[in-house]
Length: 356
Image (cartoon, rainbow, N blue to C red; front, side):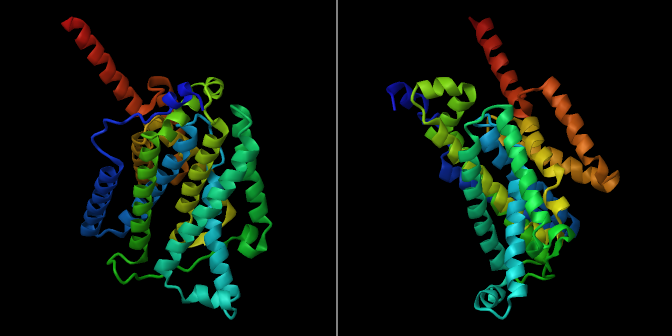
């Protein structure tokens, strides 16, 4: 790599007062505090609604690693999410259909709480590998051609699932969720909430760590001008493969607990349009060039959707997202965080100019 390329991907935050370890500790502390507040309130609905919002935080953050940092718009978010969900279906089906075999008996002997964690890890590995393969096949495409290829991936996987009887096919599959969890008063749904909260911590730490590293500078070089980055010696294909792998893994991990949450999984729910739309809209609304943008967008849009579902109708969710996305594209094309960042920058410039 040339000296120009090395300089272009130097860590952008050498003077950053908050290191990755400190950020992880702070994020975990906020997560614990958030759970404590929900537990004190004691409403089961908050666990159900909060799980959905946290799920979208992970999806939006995962999408932003490829779509925001690298500038490659991925329409296949629902495919990776469903891949994680159907990984869980495969494991539970093996445990029930082959209960007398050694593998089925071993899976059945694992406590449900531990089994869900193992499924999350396995889903992350499988989805990451698929993301790597998808990247290798499609990342030589650019712009709208890449986006269409990722959409085609989602269609192909959904067709495969619909015709695969082992995972329920078009009729779907049931997953029996335990009612109680020994360590949490809110039962197993509270455990799923905590698990998704921990996944949010992991996703945010990974996203921020990438943003403030050599890898993040490489992603930014690809987003700003990929041809110039290649000319400077930046290994663009390798960096894009890393992005698709990490993004796919996080999306798959977000989908793994979903069958336990919903109880009955069918292709229409796993490959739902809301996952593909929200995964793109939330970072766009919050801002795509920083780790905090997808978090802000997911919390705002996700909370608003849950409120609309209860007070108006769940049918309006995508309409609300579409209208808000159009509004922010017109008023604040860089998202909420980008709008305030630009506002602060303009005020500093105007203040500096008046002072001189």
